[in-house]
Image 1 (cartoon, rainbow, N blue to C red):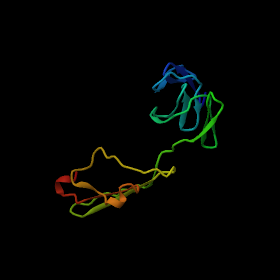
Image 2 (cartoon, rainbow, N blue to C red):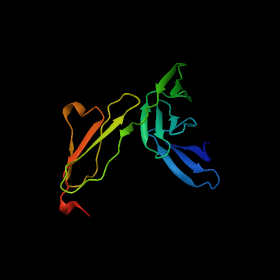
Image 3 (spheres, rainbow, N blue to C red):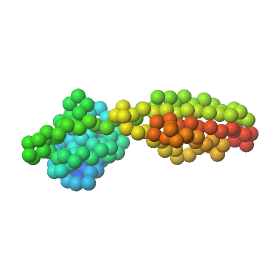
Image 4 (cartoon, one colour):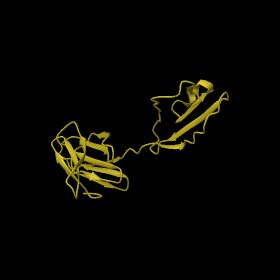
Length: 165
């Protein structure tokens, strides 16, 4: 239990229920039957099967990591410890999400070049990539090859009169 939420194992899933109402809030689905009660942190849930540990985002239910070690799980000081059947304890760093360093996008002005740099940092030193679902028709992504994995993205374009509203 954490923050008035109860976590229950149901087959291949961990199900989150509100403590006071018993209402099901979220389901965390894994690829194999789960055997141990989950370990809950402020933003992660880790739960073990016989051969793997599944790490989920606590608030979205997204599967973030699959660790190739099964058994009892303990979370301490930002590290996840898993004790296998053979008595060996494996330590893993839980992958943390990237954070945006700059994301102050200013309004664009008709007929003037608009540029915005978006920069993100990964606290685990992994490459950061961006995915953009939709941009205004006048705006494009300009990225040089040396910035592709550097966590930087440049948006550029000039809005015309038909783009104002």
